[in-house]
Length: 350
Image 1 (spheres, rainbow, N blue to C red):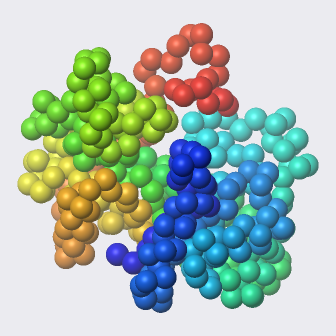
Image 2 (image 1 turned 60 degrees about the vertical axis):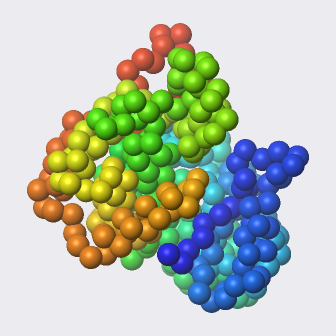
């Protein structure tokens, strides 16, 4: 464990007491007291129309100050400069051509973005770059621009990936990464904690209360929210991360829990972490923890993964579950007839 991933926008949600940039400041304070060359730091510039050459350079320099370091190992766009359904975590049903064409006239192009990253590399302020919440179009666009400019190719992409979201292996991202030896950082490998079993679902944990935002027992929900097990027990994040709790996602999670029990793994968490660790497409798993106990559980899972592969039959049984629903995060059983192109949290679809 040697990588810390953050962003200039963190914490999310921010507030007057905890403004954007505070997470980098906390890390910087810790980093100033530790050996810098033993730690890999990854951070991000806020995406969308904020991304242009001037802002990339300015925001990087601001991150360097907050992190109290001379260089950033990996600097990413938090989401693309351009319009892309991927920026919506893939919930959009189609790419809207009219909107895309309008956006192309105002968004920074790949050459401008990559040129800025190249200048930061030349100045010694970053060592590598890439993009988060992006897709194969973004990766290939940056590769093409880097070749045109004669500078380093992107070194990494970052996206949502887990047992219930294997999209990058099927939408061209993995293929493009293989072609150019680009790494991949998987976030939410525990699906917001839903794949750990701490919010119920598994046979041995059925008595555990559901996330507080879903609990019909209001008194119990208040108690759970007062001592949250993780983000699903907070109203803001619980509602935002509802995609990990769709009926299809819950059904898939239950099947994976059963596999963990059948193959005598230590916990559902072990299966959820060892799976991405076993995939060619994934080079790094990013994990957040609410407690030291959770951290210890994750460390043990990765130690086990380093010693042995998942059994071949278990891998196929995982694939069999996957084949029943290849993207349960966005399989919505109860989309309302009056939602009119709105998703679970009101996001635009498409």
